[in-house]
Image 1 (cartoon, protein in one colour):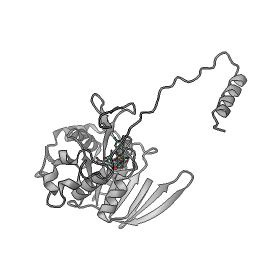
Image 2 (cartoon, rainbow, N blue to C red):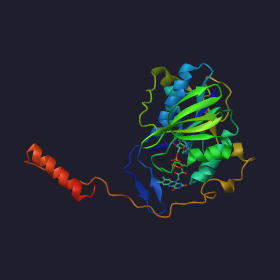
Image 3 (tube, rainbow, N blue to C red):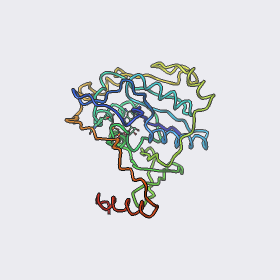
Amino acid sequence: MKILVCIKQVPETTNIKINPLDNTLMREGISAIINPDDKAGIELALRIKDKREDADVTVITMGPSEGIKALREAIAMGADDGILITDEVFSGGDTYATSLAISEFIKTLEYDLIITGRRAIDGETGQTGPEIAENLGIPQITHCTEFEIEGNKLIAKRQFDDRYHIIEAKMPCLISIIGEKINPRYMTVRGIFDSAKSNSSCEKKDKKKDRIRVLNYDYIKEKIEASKLGLKGSPTFVKEMVQGISGKNGDKLTGLTEEEAAEAIFQKIIERGFI
Ligand SMILES: Cc1cc2nc3c(=O)[nH]c(=O)nc-3n(C[C@H](O)[C@H](O)[C@H](O)COP(=O)(O)OP(=O)(O)OC[C@H]3O[C@@H](n4cnc5c(N)ncnc54)[C@H](O)[C@@H]3O)c2cc1C
């Protein structure tokens, strides 16, 4: 069983600065992490691998060359291999162009299940996973918190605010994961050594060593024109970006008894219109 997990590298902090010239993120000096929902997706894929000997987990990320670090982390957690899709042609893409590029690479791979996060914490559109499924013409179940596989059928719990649905889909299919209640496993010492030793190359000659493949536009150039990808191929763009004000100090109430404090908090809640 072949599982592909799409992971995005995102800034480690929500305190990010926006470049006012082109409304892009200023990433300098900010370390990157695997998007939390995507890390939960890796964990769920590895739980299948724990149960099934035939399960094979490949992680895919599209972005700058630093994406290798995210792939190495996933391999150190237990993934079999990773693919970094990187090229100037893909940069600046909106979700349409991003999902188109990722889908073209996925078309060259074998898969039974594709796992994405529900949303990336920087872009936050939640569109990339569903768009990949549409491009590939496969069923999708979004907002999943858990799932099981029975034969060629996937049964997922799809979360709503106040209820959940149990939904079945025939594989191959795509699911997007809400990661809040899923604790991703730590990297193992053995995994860290293995991932550090694994080569990154554009070909996979040795299954054990060449565990990271780096692919660029040339790999799919016969299938899709460059003008459909990246910034050029993006029908949407960020027109304006306004940063919210965070870190407000709040009001400090001192010298009150427990009852007075409770009453004061209650009045504040009413003042702000929450009840
Ligand atoms: C602040 C900000 C605002 C943006 N707003 C918009 C917008 O309004 N409309 C728009 O079209 N684009 C927008 N973008 C561009 C957007 O970041 C890219 O298109 C991005 O690659 C995917 O969109 P997302 O971050 O919203 O991911 P989402 O669609 O939220 O991601 C869902 C899942 O898709 C997978 N995924 C997403 N990106 C990748 C990747 N590069 N490699 C592998 N898997 C991936 C992951 O599993 C992820 O959890 C914005 C970017 C930023 C930084």
